[in-house]
Image 1 (cartoon, rainbow, N blue to C red):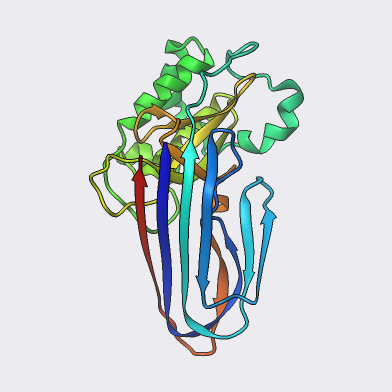
Image 2 (image 1 turned 180 degrees about the vertical axis):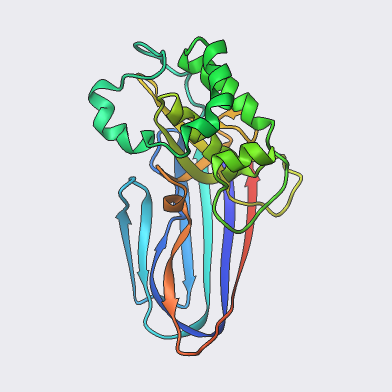
Amino acid sequence: MLFEIDHLTHYHYSTPVRLGEQLLRFLPRDCAAQQPLVEQVAIDPLPISRVAVRDEWDNRIERVRFADETDHLDIRVHLEVATLERPPAAWQGNLHLPIDYAEQAGAVAPYLLPLENPALLESFVRPMLVNSQAYAPDFLASLNQAIHAFYHCGVRLEGAAQRPAETLARGGGVCRDLTLLFMAACRQAGLAARFVSGYQQGDGFRQQRFLHAWAEVCLPGAGWLGYDPTHNAIVGSEHIAIAAAANQAATMPLQGGYTFAGARLTSTLDTDIRITTR
């Protein structure tokens, strides 16, 4: 499948600001299942330096610095990315929970840290562990389906993901909320899980789109496998991964600050994402 993505991020400041270093995460992750063909990132105002590096989670980022004050920051991204069908997962070893990661234990340790008080998730996680007989693939399929029932088809543009217990209590959430609940349940069951931000094909009916979120789980022999509870799907050629990390904050497309001389300032953020596939 070929994705063509145009992503505009526009910040407007009510008084001129001096931008600090900005970290940009807009380029696809290195992955055998996706092949970037075109990558264009235009920034206004023009930066005085742009340095391509990797963050601690191996995401591709740009460190961008500016010289003069500005009342705006525009980032225009154009991507063309080909995705490939992923082969079926090649399970290996003992897949009963909790997983024994053996020589991988050190590498996956950050992805096993609890995201919620275990007592608050026990009544949600325990029945799926019992019904799946603690067999990881069956547990993950049940978890994906169960969390899909919490999706309320809305959009919440601002703010971090809800705490997992809050999503359970509210009985609903958007994609990042469902992803965090999925991760928390996995970690409670002894599965390494991480947060992924990127793009998804969608249904083709909506012109304006938004960034999407899903989870990846590490299983022996299979590596990192994607689960999308928003769509009750295993991640495949319909997804483009941009950033993955042990927490949501480290996957944000833009990270940075600013200073200003006045006493008050207001800022607005507008985004426009257009995706076509063929």
